[in-house]
Amino acid sequence: MFVYEKRLQYPVRIKKPNAKLAKIIITQYGGPDGELGASLRYLSQRYTMPLPELQATLTDIGTEELGHLEMIGAIVYQLTKDLTIEQIKEAGFDDYFVDHTTGIFPTAASGMPYTAASMQVKGDAITDLHENMAAEQGL
Amino acid sequence: MSERDIQLKKLSCIAFSMHDLRLFLDTHPDSTEAMEKLNDLEKIFKPLKEKFEKKFGPLKISNADNAVEWIKGPWPWEVN
Image 1 (cartoon, one colour):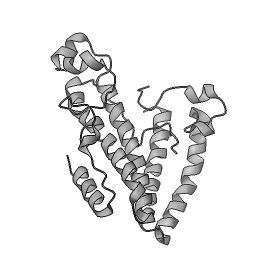
Image 2 (cartoon, helix red, strand yellow; image 1 turned 90 degrees about the vertical axis):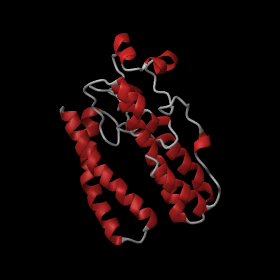
Image 3 (tube, each protein chain N blue to C red; image 1 turned 180 degrees about the vertical axis):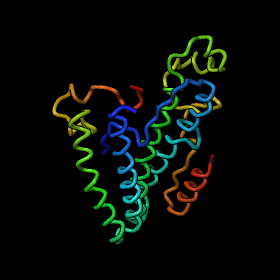
Image 4 (spheres, rainbow over the protein chains, first blue to last red; image 1 turned 120 degrees about the vertical axis):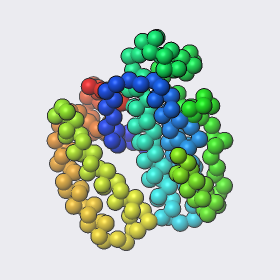
C-alpha cells in the first residue's frame, strides 16, 4: 500500500507563469519517458523480479517516481496559474486549454495522452532492466 | 522564504539523503556504513519533523489528530 506525505520531494516556487514552457514540461508528466510512465514501469515490473534486492529497488524507486510526478504537476500548475485569455493565446496554450483548461492532464508535449504503449513489462529481469535504462536516458 | 519554507527545506534535505541511503541499502543490505549513516540522519530528522508538524500541521494523515488539521492548506503544489 502507499501512504501520502504532504510535501514535495523538492519545493516548487514558480515566480512567473509561462504557459509556453508548461506545454513542453508537461511531457515529463505524461509523456513516453515521463514520471508516470517511470512509476508504472517499475511498479509493474517488480512482481516478476527474481531477487529481493530487485523487488525492493523497483518498489522504492517506483514509489519515488510518484514523488517526481507530483513535482512536475506542481511545476505545470504554477506555470499556468492566473493566466489571462490573451496570455493563453499568445503562448500557444489555447490548444491544451480548450480541452483541459488549466487542469493537469497526463499528456506528452505532442498532445498524445499518456499511454502504457510507450512502456514495456516482459517478466524477464534483464529485458526489463534494459528497457528501464533506455527510458531513464530518454531525455 | 517563510519560516515554514525554511524548516521544510531543511527537513527535505535530510529526508533526501536518508532516501538515497535507503535505495543504496536495497542493493547493499549488509552495508554497516550506510546503515550507520542512516541512523545518524534519523536522529537529526526525528526532532526536526516533530517540531515542523507541531507548528505547521501533520505531514502524514496518520499523524493528524483530526481531519480539520489534515485538510488544511497549503497543499504541496500551492504557493503560499
